[in-house]
Length: 174
Image 1 (cartoon, rainbow, N blue to C red):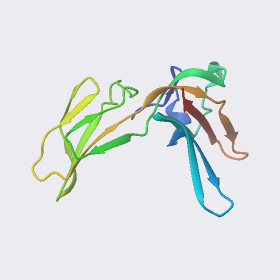
Image 2: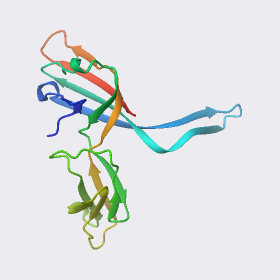
Image 3: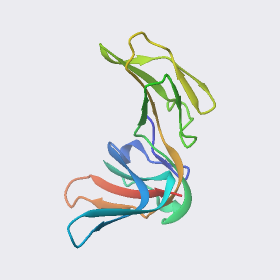
């Protein structure tokens, strides 16, 4: 099991017995409802989309991020929820912003008539090549994101009764 790592600080297992992570893709788009009821959107920038993540946890001890003096910019977030890229091709280019530590290696899958199945994958830089499988409909590579982020101060809670601590932290890719 991988740890969430924020600015070099590993969130302890006892602080994250329950752990959830969600991703949102950030864009500079504004949506408008016009006077006639029609819908319009305006995009200020496109291209390289950024990630926002919200990580929540619950455990027996506090999360322990006080040494980071949050909020702070340019902290590395090492995530524990995989993201996936699916393609009709067995060659898939992965984002450079991904974890490379032990246990966080990208993994490959192929969809055929039997469903999704694990498949060998080799790497050349950011390019993943999955073994070709007869009757393959699609290929997929899953990876763990890691990126520089603007990290907000965590929200921490302690149950009035009992020994459970809960927390949440929000970060946006720089």
